[in-house]
Structure formats: structure tokens, C-alpha cells
Length: 88
Ligand SMILES: [Zn+2]
Image (cartoon, rainbow, N blue to C red):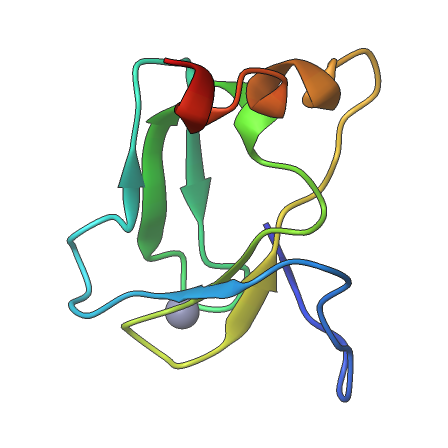
């Protein structure tokens, strides 16, 4: 992940706050671990890439830096949110 620019405001996204360093905010069944851009602390573990879109922010529990997910080319980010919970 990268660090948020000073004054950068989430666009329709929220900031997840990590309560404890060493305890990832998200844990999934994907292939990607996401670490803090400043201190290297693990923020999200084993996540499918399509869930980590640019709207997602995580405040690091280790150093307090706000991290922004970097979108990668070729990942279908829309697919992660296509199914609404209400449908299930
Ligand atoms: Zn950090």
C-alpha cells in the first residue's frame, strides 16, 4: 500500500482503523498481503486483489499512517462488490 497524501480525502470510501499492530484489519482467502507503506506492519492478510481498490484506506496500528490501496492493472475490482449482501 502507499501512504495517503497530506489532505487526501477518501472518495466514497472509509478508513479502516487497525486496533493492534500484528492483527490485520482484513483477512481473506486470496493471495495478497498488504503492509504499511511506512513501517511495514501487516495491515491486511491473504486478500483477493480485487477487494483492495483505491477507495480503501487503512490506518496503521503501528505508526498511525493512513495507507491507500494501489490498484493494479488487469484486476477486475468491480467483481468484488457486484454481489450485494442483501441478495444473499
Ligand atoms: Zn505503519
